Length: 103
Image 1 (cartoon, rainbow, N blue to C red):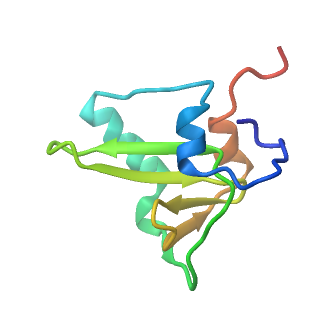
Image 2: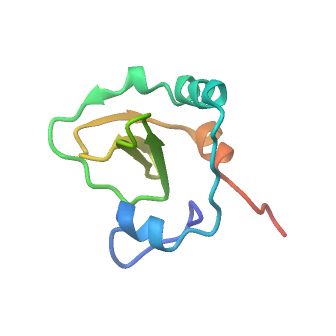
């Protein structure tokens, strides 16, 4: 979903999973680690209340045991699946997840 689209209802993680237009899979563990470092997961902070923002991007990591760890990106934040941790994002972050340009 494009960043500037307004929706009538909040888009959930599951909504994005069902209606994605671009999907990227990274299987190389070294590249996954670089991506994790770029996301700056360690800089996420505890939310005072559960965050429930409009999901635009869903990021799933699968551990060796096939356990899934999920984050989602809203217009302003990177948020854990449970909505209890987050970090602010900026235009540079959003631009990394902008595809198609002005075709």
